[in-house]
Image (tube, rainbow, N blue to C red; front, side):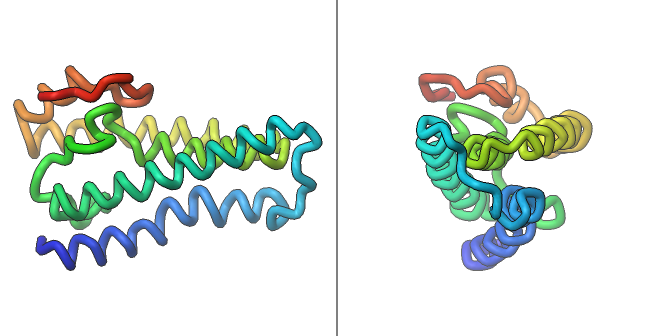
Length: 165
């Protein structure tokens, strides 16, 4: 897949997946963000910071797929190369971690137990998808390269120091 196609495909998938999961659905679940903001100023600050940081990670991760992997995160247009640079040197699933962080940031911002429950359901769904589809697919596609990466980089809780494999 060429660079332009990878960027266009990743942008389309960005709008179709994380924007829906971390944006549209929470918007609908919180009565269009009509809930009052948390009465706890610390929750508002931490929630806002978590959202902003997670969006930055998400954009970086999508960029890596297009520019390093020459593909998209969508299973129908996978990368040509295994993506292991940038944030992927710290955690194998930065997109999922970022999406869940955005949802949890909104839960803090709005003091919403509904969004906490949604994040838990999302984490179970994402974890299952990774375990039963993504990891076997990557192991089959990239073989020993992926297995080495998988042994050295955690899936969900980032390493403090980047893997230099």
